Image 1 (spheres, rainbow, N blue to C red):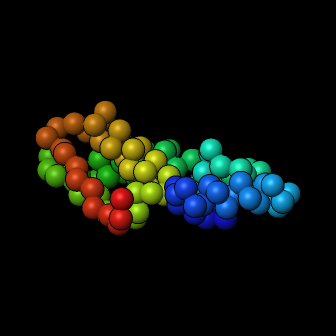
Image 2 (cartoon, rainbow, N blue to C red; image 1 turned 30 degrees about the horizontal axis):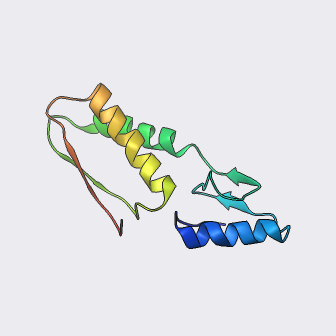
Image 3 (cartoon, rainbow, N blue to C red; image 1 turned 120 degrees about the horizontal axis):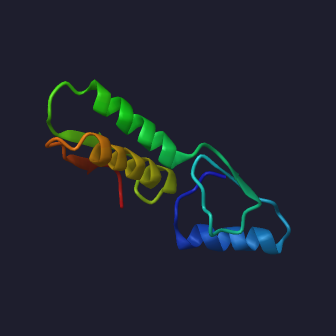
Length: 104
């Protein structure tokens, strides 16, 4: 299953669990949900890798604008978190970043 953080999703997963229907999340995790396991990449590390590549690519200080999907998907939030962390830690020279994305 691939779903966003929403009470209706968690209720549906609890219902699946009550009926002994196994649920596996993919791409974006719902760690507090009634699921068997999660199959996917480390989204935080993926964001950190993107931030490192972006920082190495930039030739001069400037503004970085991030475009992302919906913020109610943990995968998107974690990638943004990793990206921002690396820019702040390793490439702080006047670089700020803004986010643009879907519904919050």
